[in-house]
Image (cartoon, rainbow, N blue to C red):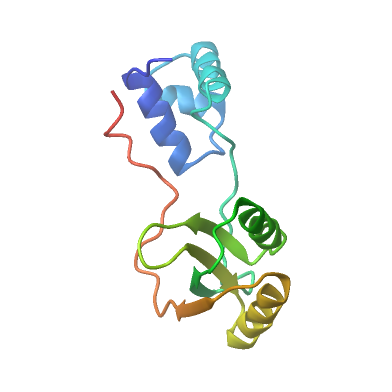
Length: 155
């Protein structure tokens, strides 16, 4: 599916407020309601829109401490990675999990209430999987965070 300017505007608006009614979204992008609804459905069917979610306030929910966890491992076998991925998937504190290039093998973004909660998380993690090195960095201040993706690169 090739995206036109209206599709891009729909995506941009939904990135900023996925709770918009179809009518409000249509007004913002210059369409009537039915064509706008059809385009949103097509964007969903084509995989451009994966899902619509609510972004919650971590501080109000008591998980304001962000920890970036760099992991090095001795094993790079597929079965070990599968076990590691399953273990991490079962840990709700992990909000992002990436396989990396460079000096570290994996990077996790973890949210917890405080340092003792992170310590408990860390102990659970190392009890589930053998890791050769785990380095944790605590975020001191969140300067920028967004879920909105840049759309300038679309053809």
